[in-house]
Figure 1 (cartoon, rainbow, N blue to C red):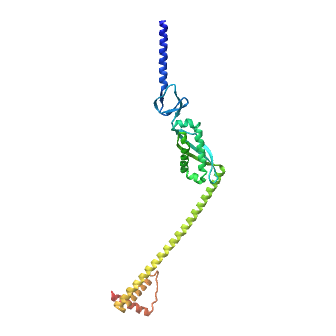
Figure 2 (spheres, rainbow, N blue to C red):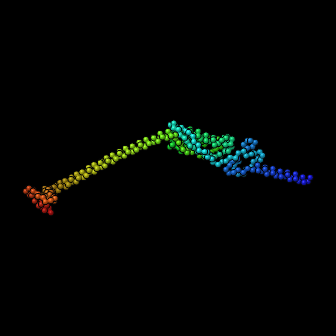
Figure 3 (cartoon, rainbow, N blue to C red):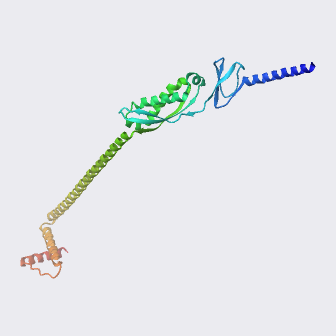
Length: 293
């Protein structure tokens, strides 16, 4: 009997020890840094446990959901959209998000990824429908900002933060692409013609400027020559005024001697016939020059 009592007592002790260990195990919850635990009590939300050691009421509270709070990326999605100028485009999008309030995500939405993908697709179609094709291509940064802002507002009730929403590419169908290529080639040809015309016009302008410059230089040279002749005439007039008729005769004699010298310096052997009156004039000229010397 005593042995039975001892065995029975040991069994109870072991049972109690196991119950204590199980109770402690159920009461203590260690949450990893990258997760949050949603705790329910009798099927209703009790609390959300953050990273670290947490305590709950054993046998009453239970961890219903273990939610990762790491950033997630949705698979790259492609959706059709029509621009304001009725061009069909295929838009590739990529979305990154993370769960910030697990209690909202668990109890308000069933399939988070599908819900976000559908929301992004609708917003992309709506925003692209407001823009023409050229604006979609040139204002992609602004378009991405608008899409991200609308996505933030739409998923806020789900306890989700959309960290990034990107438009990876905007593709056209073959017919639209061929039409745009034709338009691009036509635009290039037009620009080439405009450039050629501008070059010709510029060449004409430069030629006109060169001719105008040459004319101005010729006119300037004539003006300088005229000024020089006027100055020489003025000098002779002043000399005549100061020295009388002798100064004039001296200038005439000087010109005559210069002319005779030029004739004598001609090429080959020359015979020059000079009238007697001219010889007398040259003699007078030589005498005057000698007298001046």
